[in-house]
Image (tube, rainbow, N blue to C red):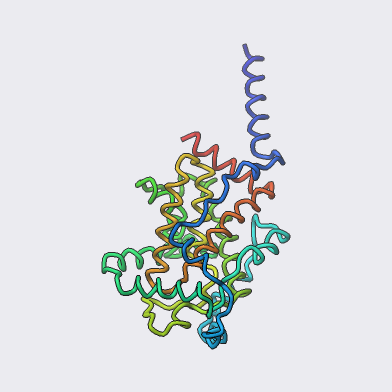
Length: 300
């Protein structure tokens, strides 16, 4: 009997080891990226090339004076799971339309329409979402933002399920999410430096943004973390994938309602988020950390 128990223990230990450290990745099992929503598709079919009749708009740049030191410094962090070769490919996956293009004109008209129809309830919701978003540099437990910063890692999951989760009860998942958010933030600010797209309110003076942001427009940081985290949680709870994406879509909408992001900024973030997850699967460290998180939830 003792030998049987020992054999079972060894078998379980070996299985756990293989689950955690197997070099085989699951990138090929990723769900395909959903197509853009119908509203964006109707805009994306328009020309993204410069329009000679509005060529002066293409001379507008993101004002250097508005660029914060923090936004510049965030690009200097190191990635955790994202490998350099994969990061180098990200800028080639996205491109914003020329400021003078028919597509940008349609996006600006859409933002003006939102501005003219937004309700106080919608504004309050968008402002609430604006304060969501974790940062990898809040590491000191005595920092007044430490707890909220970790709780917000679970925003997508909590909103989709209607439940609150104590991050301290899920250490493997929290570690995974903290490492992912570091990659997300580095990616966000490095891409912003590459493209330096002016904000919508720099191009369209009739826009009255409800806040101003101290970094370029493309891609959207809020949409990047929300969609990427939606894809991560979908790896933990595949049956809730569309629920998570729905929450990310609300975050996306909030940035447009505030008048601070073009729809194409948000669409680029959705695409980059999916490619981040695909790239992470090439890194055995991510695969091991994800499997630890999956085992953590299966044991609850």
